[in-house]
Length: 148
Image (cartoon, rainbow, N blue to C red; front, top):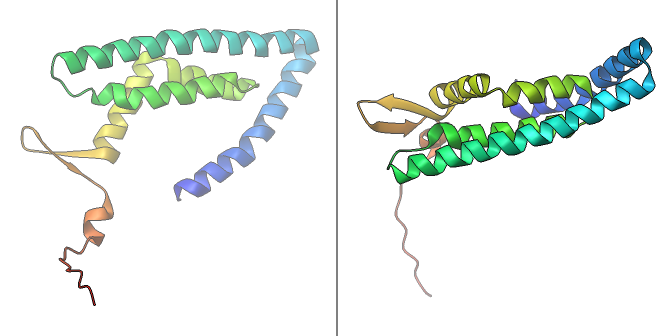
C-alpha cells in the first residue's frame, strides 16, 4: 500500500477509534475523570516531549563534536515530534501511540529499522548508498544552450 493510502486510512480510522474509546472510558469512570485524564496525558506528553527532545539534541551535538554521524538522533527527532503531536491530540489511542514514540528503547528500535531497511544500505566498511529508486530513473546527459 502506498504511503498516501496509509495516511488516508489512518486519518479516517483513528477518529472513530478515539471516539469509541473515549465513550467507553467516559461510561466507566465518568465525564470529568475522562476529561482530566485526557488533559493530564497532554501535559505529561508535553513535559516528556521537551525532556526527550533536549536529550536527543544533546546527543546529536555530542556526536557532531566527536566527528560522528548522528544518524539515530536525526531519525529520533521526527519520531519524538510525531509522538508529541499524538500526545497533544485528545484521546487515549493517540496517547498510547505518542507514549510509544517517547519510550527511548522503542524509539531507538524504530530508528534502527528505518535506517537499516529504508534509508541506507551498508556496502563495505564506511560506504553508504541510498536505496531509493531515483538512481534507476536518472538519465545522465549533457546539454549546450545555443543563442539564436
